[in-house]
Length: 134
Image (cartoon, rainbow, N blue to C red):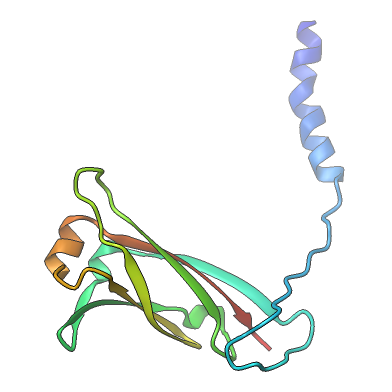
């Protein structure tokens, strides 16, 4: 019995190496500008914006996410989610102010919040953008 348990990790590794990678395709049905792009041009890109990225922008508390590394050629579809470090100190809901080929602007829904509030509560933002790269 002990020998069977010792060989199990090796069998698991070998089976994982032998399993072929399945082809996948990301399909975007609708996009803001209504443009059409060839198959294989869609990409999902994601990241995390740290809580200390919040700034004052024209009297508003805002966070600008740099998505230039995704290489989108048109405005992507974006989704954002806020999360804080502590349960006692909660972060406000957030909204997307605007999206471009290389950025996502995020604003807190509660306009009474300050940059200091967002920093003190560790209000980081996780984001996902799906768009075309060709």
